[in-house]
Amino acid sequence: MKVMKFGGGCLRDGKDFLRAAEIIKGETLTPAVVVSAVHGATDVLQDCLKMVGCDEIQTGIVIRKIRESHEKIACEVIKNKELQNGTIKAIDAKAQKLERLLYGVSYTEEVTDRTKALIMSFGERLSAIIMASVLEDIGAEAKAMEADTLGIVTDASFENATADMPTVKRNLKRNLLPMLRKGVVPVITGYFGCTPEGKITTFGRNGSDYSAAVVASALGADMLEIWKDVEGFMTADPKLVPSAKQIDRLSYYEAAELSYFGAKILHPRTVEPLLDTDIPIHIRSVAEPEAQGTLVHRSGAEKVDIIKSVTFNRDIAILKIHGAGVGHKPGIIAELGSRLSASGINIYSVITSQTCINLLLHKNDAARSLEELGKMSGGIIERVDVQDNMSLIAVVGEGLLRTKGLAAKVFTAVAAEKVNVEMISAGASEVAYYFIVDRKDLEKAVNAVHAEFFGNEKVANR
Image (tube, rainbow, N blue to C red; front, top):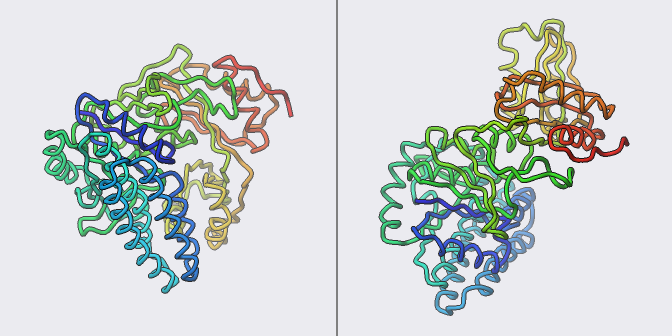
């Protein structure tokens, strides 16, 4: 049995839905399908929630935009008039519920994490309705299934939830296997689940990949296919390195590191539900369904020259906590993390010395982090400052730590381009080195490392 997930980049208009539906219908065995929201729908909802105090007119504009864009897709692609009318009616019912929620936020001028999670789930709810109807229209049996109704139970983290796998496994086997045996395609909402009490939680932005992995693990699937608008992982971002090549095979951990440090192919947590399984992940392109794509296995496979890919995150800031003994003070890192976590700030990594603790953060969190931790100055913490013009580069490959001289090749290539490395971390992961450079040197550094291992032309000094 196979689980197939279709991302928002594959679901932009009626033609995209029809293309995905044809791929699903072409399967020999009935698959379970997980869908993201229609491309752009999540952004519309997110932007609306940023305007907490917006008036009724603005709220009405948002609802009209959501309703009309989804009804347009249904009318474009569903030919059976009775089915089309039923789909539009179902879309309208969801839009009315969403409208009530948004007006409530507008009137109260506040939005809780719980309310936000519920509102943000509507993109996937609407997408599942359309996909199930398109499948029905082309002759397949299908049914839209919502994660909370199915029993995808999570902890109570509303914006970064973790599935309760034993409970999910019991629920999905009870609720999905009978449908699959009858040849009915369940079209499941990605991105969100619910607490045991039924409160909606989300898996973070682009979390439908994680949803699909949860479903695949719970059902004991033979394969998880992630359908994207790209062919798979690359040796580098082709926008930065035009000679980048597609990667045929990765391990779970290589894929996770690449995703965490900048490659947007998979949600970084996708492999978590699969770690105790042998379920491979196949990244495939809807534009070229016959292409090989990238196969992600539990077990790794080393290349002769080890490195699989060079990825980056250009939006990094370094928060520096200075003090003569900060590296030796028990509990200080826990306190720093607790203060930032309470403000909703994620720490990418921590690099310490005796006199300085360096926190890697998203640049958008730099000012808030500086303000929050600046309150701790005095005593053991002498001062806190920030560098917000940094980029992180990650070099990823199975066997990286066991290969002598590899780090020297990486940093010799970077030094030859006269790029200064601000900070280096090795050993935190068995499959990745990462280092920090000034943002202006990012392109030169990435191209230099890629040239060293994959042979592309280096960019000229700038």
